[in-house]
Image 1 (cartoon, rainbow, N blue to C red):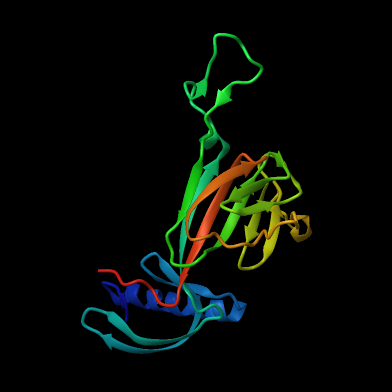
Image 2 (image 1 turned 30 degrees about the vertical axis):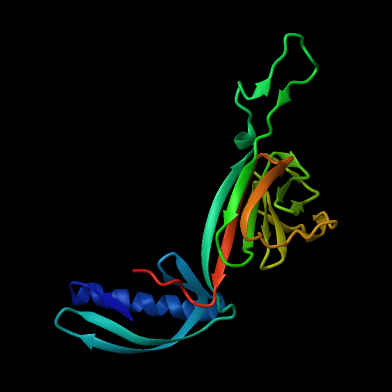
Length: 220
């Protein structure tokens, strides 16, 4: 049940009209909106509802709503930023010797991410420039694109849409689907549990896991 409430008629009816405008705009543009329960959302269209109104306190109850979804899963976005700086070894994190060697023997720094859903997760991944052939290894999967990103440019990999889009500094978007390293499945879902991460030629990656359920989680 949805409640629409305002302290006066002057505020109530514009609020109610805005609710209706938002729903009808989604349908007219064929762009679904998001229905939220807490942090979880369903991508859908709402096209009809039954209502009851109490005039004393200017409150409207939307008792039932009819909706349709092209992707009938309740989703929760879980985002993490991974930076090359996260892999830096502290000054005392390597072996030093009395005699100089060409290389210091450093203790590797591991970064792990966690998928706490019950199934592998779809994702949206953003890789930022300045870099050439950016990539990332997550668990047993490698995600790599053969392209050049200038400072300020970025690319977006969307596993559900099966798309790879480059965005330049003017905001221009280019489909670079064919630039993927085809030796690997660039749209492979993020496995359940802990996954070790390794960056490849890229200074910063934002990874948003999309945790999906057939119905929303219950909360108090």
